[in-house]
Length: 327
Image 1 (cartoon, rainbow, N blue to C red):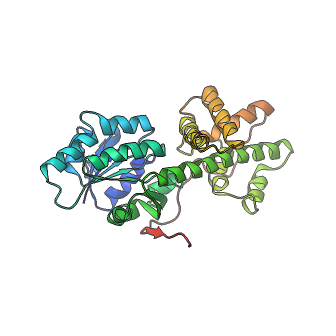
Image 2: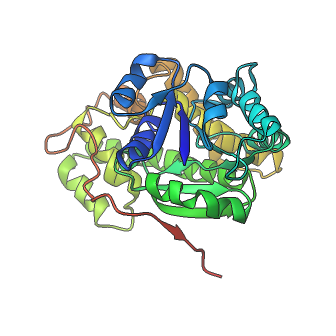
Image 3: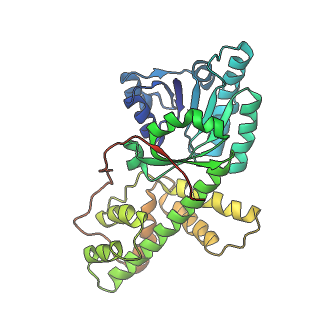
């Protein structure tokens, strides 16, 4: 199976690395050719355009920072859709219709819109965002949601289990994107609550190392605490995720709730806080530095020794599998 991968950023580069490491015939593309160089040096091919990639590959994966970036890659004159149409018109896809995997965190209505264009071009669309942190993407242990027809899911499952450990078929196209923004909303809310908890514990004179352990062994523990709290306390605040991306994610969730007329209370506050974080510290500031708003307000420095500067997945790479929901 020939796989094309567009977008070799924080998550995309690690997902593409899992494919290359496991022997897939991989073609890559990124706006910055230098980012792609290690992949090409490692045996991947380079595509001069998204269309060229789509004409040469059975599966095309996009992992891009925004819906607008995905639209540009898909719909340009030399975009993926043009390549898919060319293959369909030539009748050269002997192994069955091609598949487009959208691995970005995006708006479900946008992925359905582009998905309809993919179907018109003779291919099959899947939205399959990832969750679990870039450290798990690097080792192939990340979770992947997949929204598509069941037959398409079964065709693409071997590729998904190479990039991730726990694979969930969420339903039709768009369902994975909805659940992804739901889970990212929860993680973002937890980041804010963890920040408030650590600053308040510090203000109360609590030892920060002891405070971390108290939360970790208690009912207040969470994935976010076990990962992001560590880089907060170290001071690096490096979780490979930035303010603009969190703002995008909470904005997508808030927009979804508004479309559905769900009167949320916390969601608008999260949008406001992270937009303020972008304004204060810049789009590319690491998202855990949202705690600086409270550090600056209190004059406290919430850092201590004994914590790593970055999170590394210490679990061995294992074959992935489908997660089946209880019924």
